[in-house]
Length: 112
Image 1 (cartoon, rainbow, N blue to C red):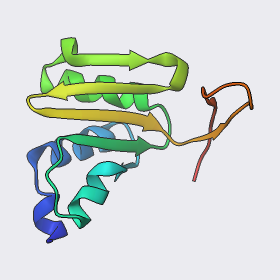
Image 2 (cartoon, rainbow, N blue to C red; image 1 turned 90 degrees about the vertical axis):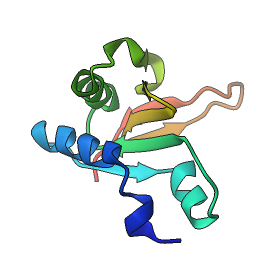
Image 3 (spheres, one colour; image 1 turned 60 degrees about the horizontal axis):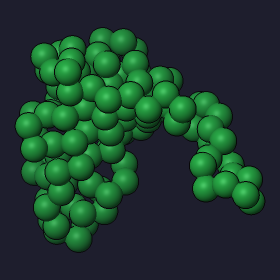
């Protein structure tokens, strides 16, 4: 495992530059990070940002020229961008809580 190599995909630079252009912090999280440590291949990359994950996903899709590859899940404040074999998932920093009767989260935005 070599994190500097594992995080060298051009998509990371493109997303970072897009986030910088709109004044956002963005972090790689979730299964992709786990899979680096387990030395497993992964094509699903999750990102969390302070602010709207949907807005950042839209800007990334515009930059990549793949606006058609943008799928928005407004109820949960998430969005997905398909980029070749990669599935990029974006979410804003949030807190989730659940009712006993439902598996669907109640989502609230948070800041760091």
